[in-house]
Length: 354
Image (cartoon, rainbow, N blue to C red):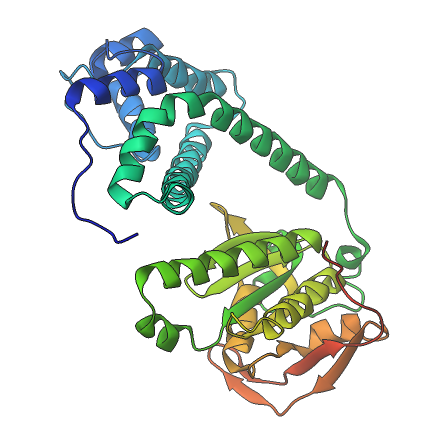
């Protein structure tokens, strides 16, 4: 259906009714009142509100609900009982704000697009219908969010509790860390997968075709990374960044991604790289020389291929599932001359997708 610039016909009364349903009640408190009721300073309440990603409101504006007060008391309690510092509480609040902001936009657009296709209505009509039907969706969506968060939290705990054999080998045969790298807390396989010719393709695509390409790319990458036991860190336009707990798992994921897109006539091929090394996780992202090395190697990989560095290749050597072929040396920004190694599939079928 064609897009339209017509605005949804949503009146103030309807918006207020939906807002009360979402927020669990009407606005009854201003900033000074909510701070006083929670027993905190105005500065702390304002910091937490900003960290969540919400716009500033004046001190006299009655803009807060009882649920806002409960959230402020909860965050304050974590600090007052010594569970965490104020800085940590603000950081966690910022993580919630940034992640849920993206999630809400994603969910709204996914539901609207589904309505347009499934019901054969316009984009504007779909948005009007979503607002009408939203109250019935709140509880199931919130339940799924809580379920997913608990599951992800459990995965994080398991990763903390289990030290893999590859991590223990770090000091006895693994890659020699660069200056300052020994201070990085965890060792992981870091991988990138990059869609080839994405920029030129995007110029020739309309909005819907481009959205479908990006959505398909991210969904298939997420599936393969999940099956391989890895974790997708983020997508950067036409590129996906992921980690895995062992060099072998990272290599399996990298090869599976390359094979999957090479065999799909409707998708561009990818190029990628995977490197084992220490990283610094912060704010849901990862940092360090290992990440930079994987990114640089991806940029010089040929279409449909996966590169790694020599230290990672040494850790994969002797595993019949992988074939490692040294390549010509290359000068990479920030690293100087390096000796890439081409990673290809050896014996076995690799990752098996349902």
